[in-house]
Image 1 (spheres, rainbow, N blue to C red):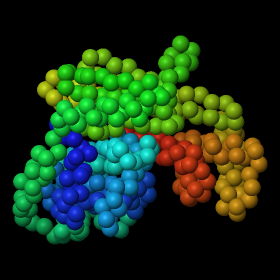
Image 2 (cartoon, rainbow, N blue to C red):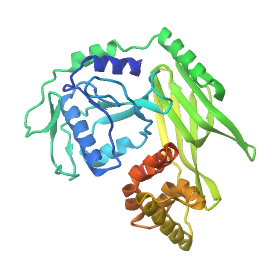
Image 3 (cartoon, rainbow, N blue to C red):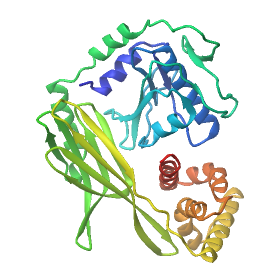
Image 4 (cartoon, rainbow, N blue to C red):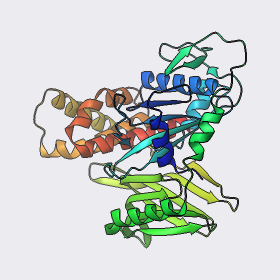
Amino acid sequence: MINKRLLIKNLLAHNDENSFYDKKLQIDISEKEGKAKFLKHVCALSNSNPKNNSYIVIGIQDEDNKIIGVDFFDDSKIQNLINAYLENPPSVQYENISFPHLPDDKVVGLVTIRSSSRLTSLKRNIWKYYGGSVFFRDGSMSMPKVFDIQVEDKNSSIVAAIEAHAQNNIEYTLDGVFAFMEKRRVYDPKYLVFQEYFVMCWAGQKKTVNDKTFYSRVDIALINEQVRLFYSDLDEVSISYSKDWFKIVEFINLGFHNNSAYYKLEETIIRFQNNASYQIESQLLFDPPQIDLKVLHHIFNSNNLIIDKLARQQPLSDRENKDLLNLPISYLMCHFNGFEDALNRLKDARLLIRTHSKTMHQIYNESMRILRKVKYN
């Protein structure tokens, strides 16, 4: 089993980006330009590596390879995005990898791309790239090319050697368990062993509501691979497990003017096999609530006034500061209830919301995460 933290270190040891790996400070697939550039790089790496894995490492400063980290990114629907835009799509997996020196809310993103061995191209236009475009890696650049012959397999032995040097061992696993238990000691950390091989650690702040147990500030990691499977400061989740599976059900709190309710968002089951493999299955459970349109019109207009005041740097009232905390989610609910301009308003206000406070940054990310799950489900 590959220790993904070691894999990233080995990839970064190849200081220059090349035809089998790329590094990015960040990506933003919520915007058309960022989505298009990400698809271009996936397409180019897939076509340039028909026989081996290729990688994108996210959260790395380009000039000196310094590991900066990015926000935890829930990847459960990213393959649907790839399938929607690419012909002969590769298999793509996004994983969140913890590093000891990073803050709790930061990880390094690792995108693993496995080619279908067929030529990958864009299905349709996106941003400035045309449907039918084909991209390849030219050194560290992803370039469009006219192509009519089979690409040469020149990276498989190099990548195989890098992956071989990143294999996990008992020492790494034990160190990982001890580090997790110490870091999460105030949230009752636990470890579980599945199929006598996989070691998972998890922790959370327990809360009981109507005889049901929920956890907030949840952190879940597969220690063998140093992959963080789940992290959130905001969500509340239910957790259950058996000897060969671990299930997470996420809930989101949607509140409007002191009225709030919990809604199921997604169910994720990790199934551990006795052949040293595992599968992650995710199912979207979210059904957007239908809300009285008169109430939504009032909320929509109130949100617009708050954003206008922030843009003009005018002070907010106590009530407006409370409403601001609900603003990203309430814009999202307006969008789900047919307000065509709500999503544009939310995206236009992104910088104002995110720079207002760290809490607002987290709430905005949460609303975008919900939108992404629903959109690509």
